[in-house]
Amino acid sequence: MSVLFIAVLTSLTIFIVYQNNSADTALTSIQQTRIPVRLVTGNLVGSLDRVMSQQRAYMLSGNIAFKEERKSVYANEIYPAISQLITISSSLPEEQQQSVQRIQNQVKSFESVQNGILIFFEEKMLPNMQRVNTATEDEWSSLNDSFISKLKAEREISERIKEADNIRAELLKQVTEIKNYQETMLRDEMDSITSNQR
Image 1 (cartoon, helix red, strand yellow):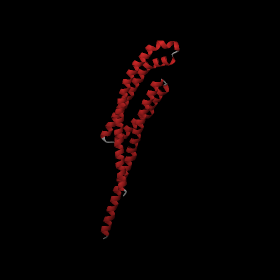
Image 2 (cartoon, rainbow, N blue to C red):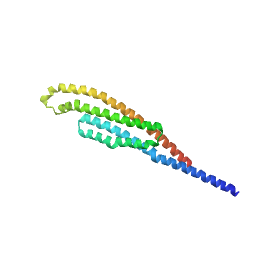
Image 3 (cartoon, rainbow, N blue to C red):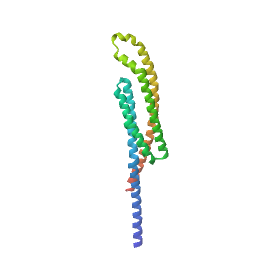
Image 4 (cartoon, rainbow, N blue to C red):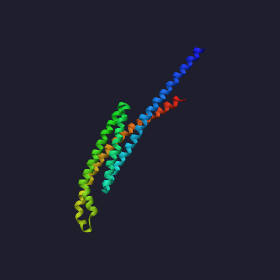
């Protein structure tokens, strides 16, 4: 009888240790990977929206503060988020690691296209915009050429913005895939923890 009791106690102890180890592993994964990836991807999406908004605001107003804010978002939010994702990605499956690399490359492409749009805007549109905005009544008749140039430039910049939007859409797709995968894994690990505690 005492041998049976010791065997039951040993089995129970092994079972409890196993469940605690499983819960500890899941909690560690949640703390070190799932939640950080979820937060970083969410922040990255918000930051991408901000750089698009800042660029459009600059192009509509010509206010340099919007251009500087866009640069700041890249330097202080987007690239640090990419660095965090790369660091965290070592604990992700191979497919997710490849997605992180694609995101990094797409962010660089997105910024490059946006920079090209800004250069075009500043060379072709901003001077005409400033000329139109500061024109006196006597100068309005001579503004037809500036207005036509502005319309042509707007058409061309519209095409470039579409290119940036396409890159952004692909970026968001990649970020969303990682985010959704992490959410699924987080739910599974939380379910595992709660089922182990019953």
